[in-house]
Every structure is written in structure tokens, then in C-alpha cells.
Amino acid sequence: MLPEKLLEPLRAHLERARLLHARDLREGYGEARLPYALARKDPRAGREWCWQFVFPSQHRSAGPTLGETTGMN
Image (tube, rainbow, N blue to C red; front, side, top):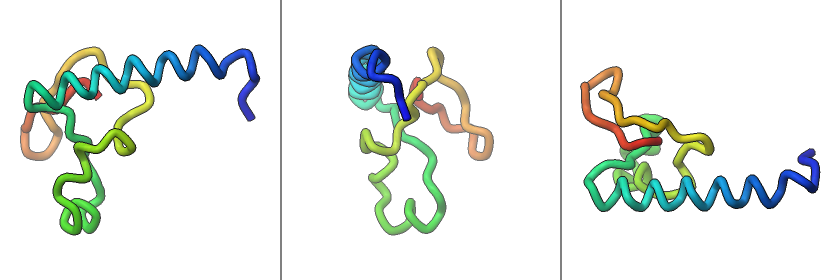
């Protein structure tokens, strides 16, 4: 359950996160780490908006396994 008074702030936050994700994609980042089987089945799925974090990081970071640079999410 989410209080109705939080709906619009949450929508606004998600729109900012979506725009941030779009910018990351343009700059060659923005891919979320997915479970192995899903990543294998659809290698581009991690770039889709539906797999991104609701509260993205403000800074890019190196991935924990391969050292790849991840987007701000």
C-alpha cells in the first residue's frame, strides 16, 4: 500500500530516473546485471527500463565481478 499523497512524488522520481537511464544509454552505460539465464536468453534485456533500479546511484561504479563500469543505476 502506498499513500495517495506519495503517488505524484514517486511518479516524478521515476521520470527523473528514466531520463537518467536514457542518458546513461546514450553514453554507453545503463545496463543492469541480470540473472545468468535471463541474460543469456536476452542479452539486451539489462538495458531495458523495466530492469533498472528504482533508486539509482548518483555515481558510476566498477562492477564487482568483471570490473565493468556500470551506469548510474
